[in-house]
Length: 384
Ligand SMILES: NC(=O)C1=CN([C@@H]2O[C@H](COP(=O)(O)OP(=O)(O)OC[C@H]3O[C@@H](n4cnc5c(N)ncnc54)[C@H](OP(=O)(O)O)[C@@H]3O)[C@@H](O)[C@H]2O)C=CC1
Ligand SMILES: CC(=O)[C@@H](O)[C@H](O)COP(=O)(O)O
Ligand SMILES: [Mn+2]
Image (cartoon, helix red, strand yellow):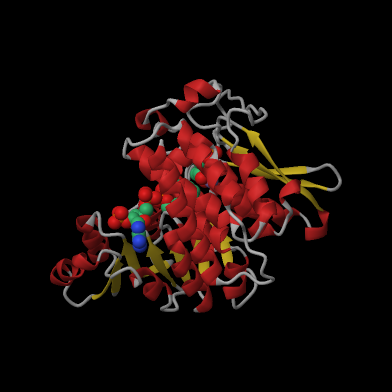
């Protein structure tokens, strides 16, 4: 039977690839809804027409009338809550491909509605933490789409939870691998946006360059697989073919390998636990090739260490880690600050955060921490 799928962030890198997968597997999926920010209405309209989508959501309230004119017969939701409203409609699968912690409420809404959450929007899990788990109404409701976490989920099929010794996240190292700290500090947006192996949206690409992406992924892995951060290692693998590994207690390591192509983990996220035939090309074993692994230069890239400290500090520190970074990335891409100030600002704001002492994390506590971190980061960034 066809699976109904809602795609949040349909006009982005994850969203467009998800719709490619749906189009390439006729009869397997039905698109039940699309959502976007509103920056690319032409594409959103074209997608809605191509997939005969019954509901479209857009964050920009001013885009509502344009969409209603262009899509007669389609229900249009417009405004900041539109994505969460769409996520709550009870589709079989909600793919969250929104960028940033603005994806938190849609993530919670999808889980509460009982939909399988195919999660690319790692920020919502990192900032929401225990809240996200508490919103789930059944086990295994969250299926990772992030390539590393998809790799780990696949590798975990090889053993029982008690047999897992540690998780090993691979990192490409980004465009500044091998650079000195001084050189990294003055990198330009153009340099930061030139990822060596993946073509992705701008925020995750800059996060890869600063290794903040790997810090977020460390916390994401801890939350998804319930493995303490001390038992999650990060290793640099510049080819991005081994997407991560699980080391078992007997010394066996199971790795997942495929050329860097998000269509594979997206397809698996939509079809989990099944695989979609020909979702992506496999490795070519007929050509000579080599895979290399090296330690992360933690002195040049402190972001992963900061994530370890944030995860240990309190339940609201991860939200602060992410919010300060989102502010830093926006300022960097707007040309207001140098690259080195992104992570320096995250470190400073984390240090100043009091953290929650409450037993149970609440949504208000997360949103308060976010608001405080964004305001404080803006002050620090403006002060120069
Ligand atoms: N791209 C990749 O290969 C990978 C991405 N990820 C993660 O997936 C997520 C998406 O990344 P990516 O696709 O690269 O990002 P993009 O910037 O390419 O796309 C972001 C999407 O989110 C939409 N959007 C922005 N704000 C809102 C909002 N308030 N409500 C609804 N939609 C909104 C955008 O719409 P509009 O076009 O209107 O702005 C766009 O469709 C991120 O969390 C990223 O870290 C994880 C692994 C790999
Ligand atoms: C494709 C994907 O999952 C990205 O999150 C990827 O991880 C970015 O690569 P690096 O962060 O390892 O450079
Ligand atoms: Mn990733």
